[in-house]
Image 1 (cartoon, rainbow, N blue to C red):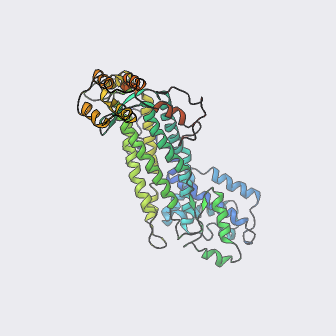
Image 2: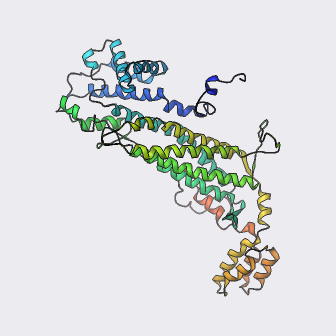
Image 3: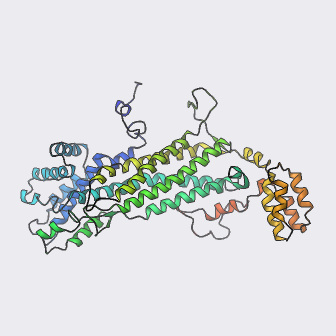
Length: 482
């Protein structure tokens, strides 16, 4: 073992807890077992507070200021010793949610809380009342604290690179064959806009929460306090957590909103994977250079290599994440009748799924920071592709009514090496109006990029990472027009 190696990390089964532990730390804070206990404990405490403030529940008078303060301190200070004590209780009773209930009662008893009032802890609740809120809060925190900042940062980085190279001519390929030229900036903008759109869709999803008892009927609540408006109490309770209240559930909240998030992240992952493969291809064609990192080794036998490992790493982790998210999205939406327990085991892996996506984001961002364009490589390749001008020439011919424009350009260019002289000689003999002929005679592959640069500058989002808004006013586009 090398000096400083963490034996726990080296023995970890999952790479998230081993090789990538430091990178996945933000996700571990939100989705770990300790975090799950922390969220459930917070829900139990808040429910006790809500019940004590309900006028119809006279057996549980309002909590005094000191007790309120103590409860807040417990929730805010929840840490490893608290989670460890809950695990001790769980080992004895073999039920994790009941262990949280007993732990809170234990702490209340220690400060002299009336034992009869302690029985209002977990009052009217089924385990899933606590768990569904805890899971929704974990997912929300995981998105807001870890995944979304990384996703926004990556998209901003892609937009920045797109803006910097909006007008840089680049060879284009359709079906792997030379096609009409583009610009590096425009191609990057395509991915930035696609990724941003998926971020927008994720941010618009409101996670759902339920709090309505064993099978969603408030049966136990009504049996004890028929005069209380339990749906209204439940609605306020759920919405106070910043979640959307779901009044129609079985024992479980049906996880449809979670599935929407998982599907949206899967779409993001797929676009990210597409981006990484194209970046890999640009590197392999030498359109992009990678900055060599001092001390790094690219191959065990070929010293010259600087491999695109970051984009490959991102591709791998995006795929793993999507596989897990796809399963969770389809699994969690299905439950036998009022409830089966298979969702409980499956949902524990949502943090794993998001963390793999987070690794992909970080790897792609790292790869992006290492690349810079090689204009001379792209220019040299474009200089050999005069056949790509067949498109603009035949289109101009169509405008002026010349016969068989497509067919004549096909005969000149398809499957053949075409030189600048071939193209210009062809244009010269067409009999086009002088202005049109001059425009085509002076056109070369590097100059045939249309409005690519203008599209980037004109529609690039100014303040957000999602889809661009309306065009900028004239004179505010910035940059050049190719």
